[in-house]
Amino acid sequence: MKRKMKLLIAGSLLMAGTLVGTALAVATQDKYALKVPGGLAFSEFRGYEGWQVVSVSEDGGLLAVVMANPTMIDAFKSGIPGNGKPFPDGSKMAKVHWNTKKLETFPAATVPATQHDVDFMVKDSKRFADSGGWGYAVFDHDVATGTFAPGTKASNPPQDNDAKCGYACHTLVKGRDYVFTEFAKR
Image 1: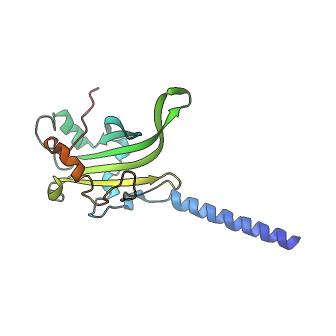
Image 2: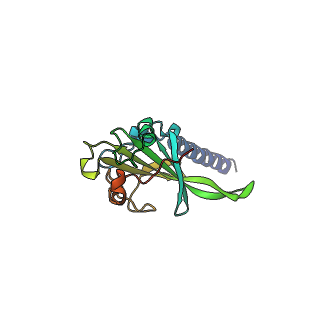
Image 3: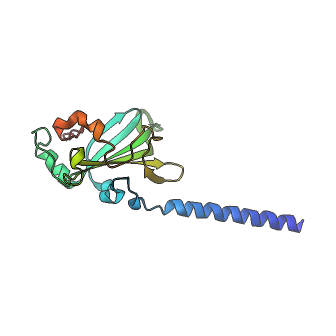
């Protein structure tokens, strides 16, 4: 009996150690080390979580908040892209998507649940001359592990996973310097 108990305890400790090790590995992912092919890196958007909100949207059952860095916010406030001028190099946007849920305390409200992904755009006319001056990246969020990975054809929606992944879609708004989002007045 003692031998079985020792094996059971040893097995439990081994399993617990494995789970703790896995949890630590997940908790310590350096999302800023991630890149999409073509070089656009998560690290280029460090601090995006604190950028000013440009707008919010809902599309395909996902809620999104679009944020921009100060360079892009200043451009929006000056009338770009509605005035026909392009955004300056260094303009950056982040769009965080969430799956939705009903708010338990107020069921009429739909609110963010788990994060789905984060999309990035950066204006760099030299680096991305062949995609309208913009570089793009999609990083899917894995709810189970809390980690990010570049979007792929297996993503929902499917993504090319290079720095030009958004170009084809954004050509619809070429006259707006490839930017769909309008700055929401407040």
